[in-house]
Picture (cartoon, rainbow, N blue to C red):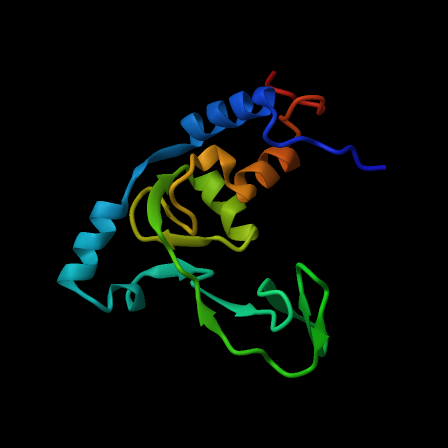
Length: 153
């Protein structure tokens, strides 16, 4: 039976704060904005992963192709025809550690590989990064949250 974890308990927020402080390097939004001003089609020249996704018509979650069907990763809706592709909406850009970029990419986050340090296209804004669901998922996967095997408590 999988343990239920309160990702946003005060202890886990402290753990995730340490994680973010260590792995998220610096805001890159101004740099990306300047590139967009210089060359509006900049994203065509860069290696950008997960910029587009297939939204589920039922819940808006992300669908992926499996065998001969498309399946929503969220609500498990299934369909045979390919859904319409949409561009992810990015609110902030952050330089992140390479290994974190790989984990974020696995979770469907937008990652730009153009500089020595990859850039995460964050799809949230207005809250601390440590509160992002994807950060909670990665910390849980690493088993560093309170009560887990490698807890940073």
